Length: 229
Image (cartoon, rainbow, N blue to C red):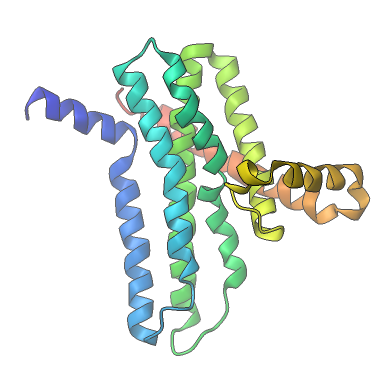
């Protein structure tokens, strides 16, 4: 293999592109199988849109990693893709909450829909972990080990908050640019009245803890079997 193609392949492997594409194809194939079995596009079609949104933070992190590789000293070029990554990052693990829509919808058996939701949820979590790892490594390389982990922890906490706002308050990532005051007001009201907003605190803490465990598990596995940079 020519050196140039070998470098491209190594970069894509390091960004976990191939398994992410494979996981997405599997999820979409199961969805299309459901459409064929039921002759109906409506049930769970939101999963396809949510999967598209889940790919956005990964693509921003991929672009940031590519810029860092090509222009390693021009860190300021990473500000825009990094900001967009953080804005859309909650969309990746958000798919896990689509299990709330699980119900028996004949003629498709319930077990099939469990596999459907699990495949989309896994892909969303995988996209989140892959993109966070990429951004974590970028911050670590520029600012050091401590700042890298503080960045990762902060991103996971903000993601938990963003998932709550998306699932229960129906805010979207782009609403933070269009209606920032309204979103901040919603958050401030809940923080000021903790006893009246237990769901807000419990859900945010649980989903954040879940994401932290997922990320730490991946990091531990990656240290045992490191991907060559």
